Image 1: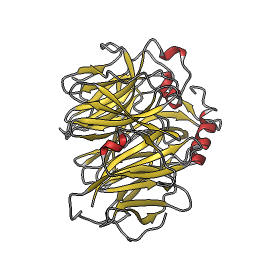
Image 2 (image 1 turned 45 degrees about the vertical axis):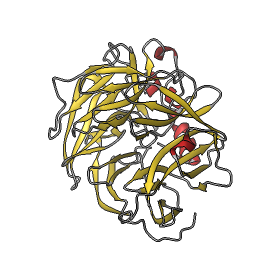
Image 3 (image 1 turned 30 degrees about the horizontal axis):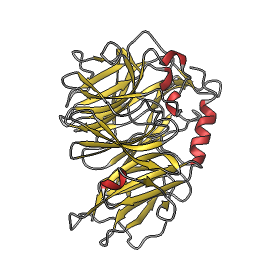
Image 4 (image 1 turned 90 degrees about the horizontal axis):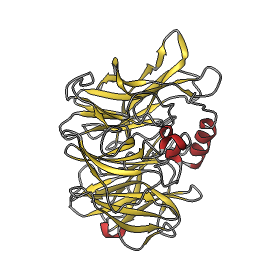
Amino acid sequence: MFVNKFQKCFALALLSLTTFSCSSDDNAPQEEPSTTDSKYVASYWLDDYTQYILDFNSIDKLMTGEISAKGVGIEQNGSCFPVENTFFALSTDDDGSASFHLNSAGKLVQGGKLAFESSYAVGYTDDKRMINIGATWDGSSSDYELMIYNPTTISVDGRKFNDFSVDPSNKKILYWPTGAAVSGDKLFVPVYTKDVTDGTNKVLSSDATMRIYKYPSLDYVTTIKDTRTTAIGMYYTNTGIVQTQSGDIYTFSSNARAGGYPVTAAASGVLRVKKGDAKFDPGYFFDLEASTIKGKVLAAYPLGGEKVFISYIPVSVDPDKSVYSFLSTQTIFKSAILDLANKTILEVTGLPDHGGDEFFGLGSLLVEDGKAYKSFVTGKEARVYQIDIATGTAKAGALLKEGLYLPSIGKLTF
């Protein structure tokens, strides 16, 4: 996820206490594009944390030359998400969240705004909406707000509070959301456990745990757990849960210091919830530590069908690295393509070992015509890379001139 300067600094300050323990000429986005003309839109995080939104006439612009925000970008705070032909900048600043779209002339313009008090977990729905989960980081309340954002009307279609305490008798041991995904009439929210009793946020050892709600009513149904692996996802990234084309839900557990967790005896791996079910599939576990990559998964991105692109850290490397290394530009991570249904792995070639994903993930990988596009820090430089999904071959693209990350990449039509 992509955060503004204040949010990042505030979160980092709190994480340091953890010891394992623009103007518009349109008022609203068009409901249905009238042509097949299109542009590519990306958010850009500069070295000084200034955030911009850029648009490109061709995918080739992501693969050649340099990408710069000077004189061409729209300065805009917020975590950016491509959703239903809009580019939504979800911000908790006083100015509010802003929705961008292409007008009839193909110009990127801002539509309406919407106020969000809190945002810690985000996910997409089957009906082209977006889930937002608001919470209090300091644990001052265990009641978190689940919301359904409608990009067409730039409004919240539904909202409901739910108690995320592990035990209602102790409101200081909390479940913390790491993502959200909808399949059919169910909303899945993976969580980890944290203790805020002494004013810090101590991450506790945890089984794979997921809360299930009805969708779209947002009524709580149950909490499911699995001891074969550990906590799903990572703080503020939304890359630990994926719905594939089949409608199945897959979850990704790192059990890694690099992911911010105390390491347990369980293996990093992938679990499945079959479409229509409300339980982990007892016959499915993809053990990544015992696989050919011998790695711990940090983030997963859907590639279409039953495949995902993952970033991982080798098991041999993780013990010597600091907690929350996914925030680091150290080149300690590798990438692979997983066929989840068949449990096969294709290691990505042509992409150097790279840094972590910072506080973004969801929306940072674009898939088009059998290729995936994503930015990576590979040492002294950061570039966009194109990855051939069939072969796993990566090709270096445009150099990011003033920053390190394109936290979100999307395609809009007009």
